Length: 185
Image 1: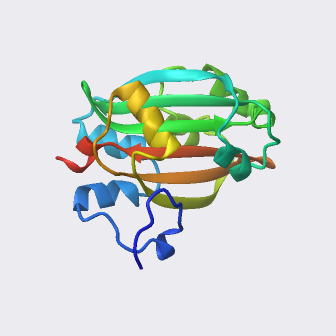
Image 2 (image 1 turned 30 degrees about the vertical axis):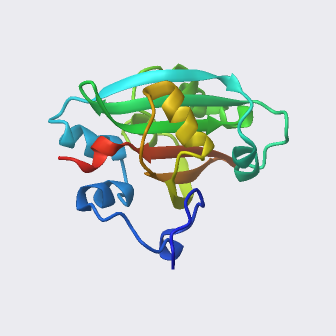
C-alpha cells in the first residue's frame, strides 16, 4: 500500500511507517508522550505556548468532533522540545461542552504539558481514548502550513498522530506533529 500524504489512517491501514526507529517509537508510543520526551531531553523539557484562544476549527476538525460549522472551540497550540530545539508541535481542540466540571482545568493549564492532566496522578481527568490515527503531512496540509507560520518553514513531510479522547460524553482531539529533530537523538 502506498502512503497517501495528508490522509489520516489507523495504524493497521498505514502502509509504510517511518524508517527512523526513534521517530517510530515516539509516533506509536502509548501513555504520556510528554514523559518520553522529557527523558529524551535529559529531564528538562521546554514547552512554548504558541496560541490558546477560542476560534473556528478547520473544516476537517469540525467533522472530526461533530461540531456545527461556525461554532468555536478552544484551540491550544504548543511546541515541546529540548532547549531551543522543538521536537513536537501539538494542537488541542476542546469544544465548549468539553470544559465542564473537572475538565475546566484545561482553561488554566497555561505553559504546563497537557499530559499532566491526561496521564498524571493525582488529579488526572476521567478520560478515555477513543481512536488514534496517523498521517504523513506535506507542505499542502493546513497543519503543516500552520506550523510554518508559527515555527518557520518545514522543508519535508512530517509524521503526525491524531487522538480522539472522551470526557463524559464529549469528545476532544489532540494532534501531535513530530518535527524533524524528533527523529534525532
